[in-house]
Image: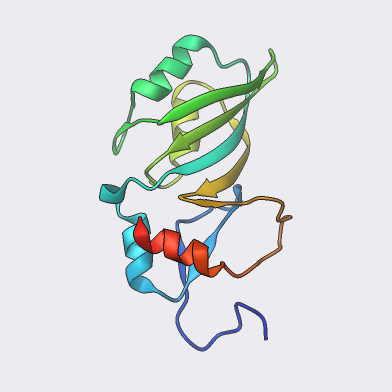
Amino acid sequence: MSLLNRKDYLFPVGRLDKDTRGLLLITNDGNLTNRLLHPSFQIERRYIVQVEGRVNGREIGLLLNGIRLEDGIAIMDRVDVISISDKKSILDISLHEGRKRLIRRMFKALGHQVIDLLRVQFGPLSLGDLKEGEIRPLTEEEVYELRCL
């Protein structure tokens, strides 16, 4: 039986838009889903983002200090540079909220289009060496960690 061939209701924890790939947690525990997604719990989400153009220090400062979007101020918790060239910048970023298309909208506000967006971590869970399209059940330890957040 496939992991997703179940009779009970499944909840996606967070969402990945059609142009984003990476870690997606699916559970049948609605209470856990609500806890992991509620902004008050400040669950970290980590991404590798590739954008067009050169992201400069001032722009990184804006990402860390807040960018005004139509639905409020958006702030990244951490921005680490992986590589920067004139044509593209690759950054390792973390934030704790999951508003719709938030990362794409933040970079658009700075004049950078997102080329690729990969979620590599959600709370204590990491994508690790899972390849695109692969799934695996959580370990008992991982479930315990999620419940303790």
